[in-house]
Length: 106
Image (cartoon, rainbow, N blue to C red):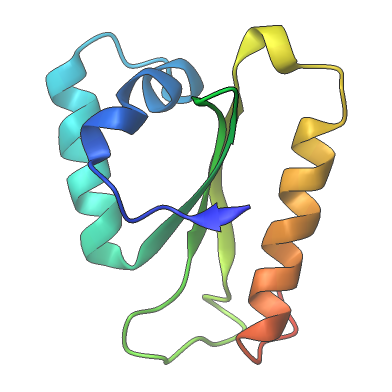
């Protein structure tokens, strides 16, 4: 799993699938708001195609508390890659990322 630093436009299809939003404009707005809130996206690609995305909330001010710990905001896997352990690996990697950032709650 790698932290996604590319163009948010590349995440539109996966984020639209995971949120159920019909409007791509709405998905763009959601991504913009999430990134401003401190959401980090992590992706994985197979054969040059992004097949999964997970959003993890990290408080940008570093003031995470019991009331607002790091959180999985959303995750999506392309339908053709489901039921293959992709989401399980994705969740495990997210937990590892939170732990490596010095936090023990997700």
